[in-house]
Image (cartoon, rainbow, N blue to C red; front, side, top):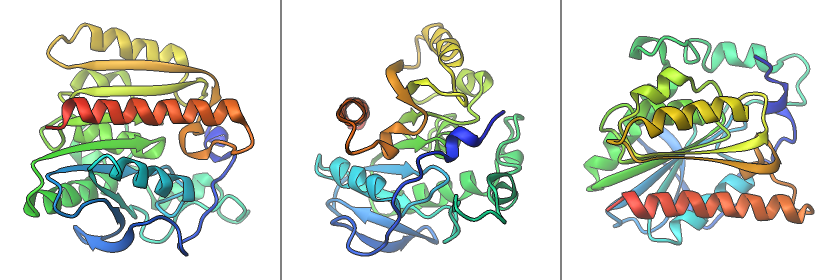
Amino acid sequence: MSETQCCENPPTLSITSVGIGCVAEIGGLKAYITGPPDAKLAVLLVSDVFGYEARKLRKLADKVASCGFYVVVPDFFYGDPYVPDNPERPIAVWRQSHGTKYFCHITCHSCIGKGFEDAIRVVSALRSEGVSAIGAAGFCWGAKVVVELGKSDYIQAAVLLHPSRVTVEDIKEVKAPIAVLGAEYDKLSPPELLKQFEEILSAKPEVDGCVKIFAGVEHGWTVRYKDEDAAEVKSAEEAHKDMLDWFNKHLK
C-alpha cells in the first residue's frame, strides 16, 4: 500500500501561541486541551502522522470545543511526529517506532500497539474526571485508533476522516455509531473501499453508520487543506460540520 499520498502537503507545525486551549497531561500523555473543563461530554481527536501540534488540527479542536465539548488532542507520538523534510527518516523508517505492529491486519488487541493502549488510558482519565460520554475522531493514522475504540464501549460515537489502514473486518466489528468521511482521490482509502464499508454498515441496523465521499479532494484534506483554495476550504468545513453533527447526535 502506497504511503506517499499521506505525506504530501504537510501541515504547519508550531506549539507557540496556537489555539485558545493549553497543553497539559492526561492519562500519562501530553495533550492539547480546549473547551469547558466541567463539560460532561468529551471529544478525543487522534491526529495523523504529523502529530498534535498541527495548526489546523488545533483550530479544529477549538471549533469542536466552541460547541460545548471538552476536547483532548493527545501527543500519541511522544514528541516525535513524522517530519517529511528529514531524508534520513522516511515514513517507512518512522513507522518502525510508531505503529508497525499497530497496522497489523489481525484485529486482536495484542497487535494493535501503543496507540490504542494510550487511547484507552486517555478515555479512562476522562471517565475519572466525570465525563459521561465520549466521541472520537481519527485522521488518517488516527482513524485506526478510533475504529478500535469503536469496537467496544470505550466511546459512544466515532468519526473516521480519510482513514488509513482501516479494513473491512474492522468495520464489521464496530459497535459504536460511526461516520466515515472520505476523499474522492485517496489511494489509502479509495472510494471503492469506502463503498464496501457502506454496504457492511447498511447490513448492521443495530449500528448507526454513515459513509460520505467528498468530491474533488485528496487524502488529508480536512486538516491539511490549502487556505487559498476556496473549494478545498469549503469541503473541509463541510466535513467538520458533518463530524460535529455526528457528535451532537450521538453524545448525550
